[in-house]
Image (cartoon, rainbow, N blue to C red):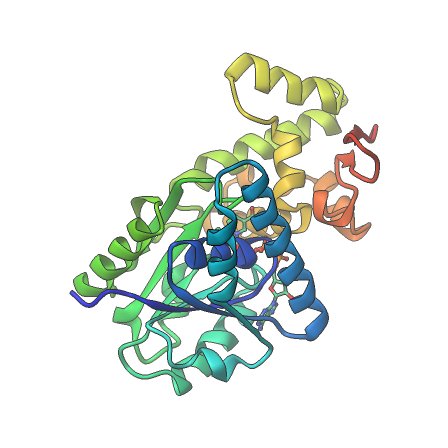
Length: 293
Ligand SMILES: NC(=O)c1ccc[n+]([C@@H]2O[C@H](COP(=O)([O-])OP(=O)(O)OC[C@H]3O[C@@H](n4cnc5c(N)ncnc54)[C@H](O)[C@@H]3O)[C@@H](O)[C@H]2O)c1
């Protein structure tokens, strides 16, 4: 089986930057693409901060940090990703945008290049149906923050070949991740259970059952979760979480996946959570402060 050594990452937001970092830290060459210079600069900064933090916490030797950094190239040109063994797409959760990326790459990349999507909730098959290589398309769903979280969900569609599946499985393991396999069902294994749980927490806030802080504290202390559902929602991104829930609702037509009005209102107000400075909490000071609804 031929090993995957060179990788392209499309999108250098929260996830794309983390994915690029992890690949470089595992000793592989990576090129990451953003739509414009300013987004690329923001992504670059995110990777620098994350690498520095890993060094500070003694998770990464300073020389290793330099070597990893040297393995990452940044570009705004999608063409530069065409010669890779694997391209991982981590752009916004919009099918049309993802299809456009894969459509262009499909024309440029050689036959053997494997395509992977980091989608949280869109059907991988929808993307596979639009390219000439459905057998070389998988879902590779990383978790946030990518350098810290061990899990990846490897999603195979009814068209994914065994060879593609095995090569990507070996690649995920080579990053030090623990892959689990899922069929192509919206939300895969984790979000299928997590999304209704977080949406119920938002509904509790809407109904005024308890404060944001108390709901989070209850889940941290009562269930031993590392963070409460509202903090988690801010961490994922209110806009991304809203999109995921819309897509899952559309797929399953079950109310438990429907985005509560409060979530929609927060998106309209661009309260995207940690990344924009305000969500359920205000992150502009030293400590997050809940914003009463
Ligand atoms: N946020 C999470 O916790 C999380 C976890 C797992 C998976 N995901 C999935 O990962 C994907 C990315 O999410 P995110 O949280 O990183 O979002 P994000 O908004 O932080 O980043 C998305 C980035 O994609 C860029 N982009 C848009 N179109 C592009 C294009 N054509 N080419 C290159 N870049 C483009 C945007 O400029 C932006 O920087 C989504 O599919 C999301 O569902 C998110």
